Length: 191
Image (cartoon, rainbow, N blue to C red; front, top):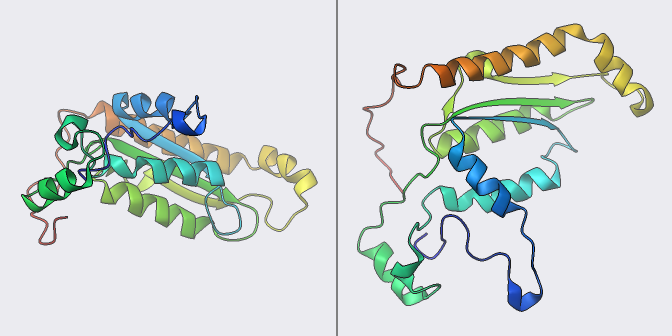
């Protein structure tokens, strides 16, 4: 991880003609946020490709090097020496609250919801209570052409999504007063 910089310094790769990198707009937003809410459909048991790409690019938030000068850019030997000397694996997004809403029409919502929760918990973000995650099927096995009508009719799921947002807001508003129950627990297998 000392070779992976936080935020990512690999993109845009001007040598390959890349000039724009949408993550450069997202990194500061993740850093500034007290709470993160991900609302996503499930695509064939998985996250949509743009969400998966963002998740992959955020890997540097979990242990990435905040100081590129320590590796003189991308010097692998310097990075290896840093890691072997005892890299701390800084958790750059730790402590932020999160909420997740995953919706689908046939299958896979609960699996994607669990995967997203596991990912955020592993980076030491804090779930916004039991009401902070929701996986629901909307228009279960109904035609795609009328799925919007199924959502419009399902006032209960609309309220559930609002409750997820309320849970996140409540977690963020408790900042400074909310003490994580596991705050003093030592991880026996730190990175």
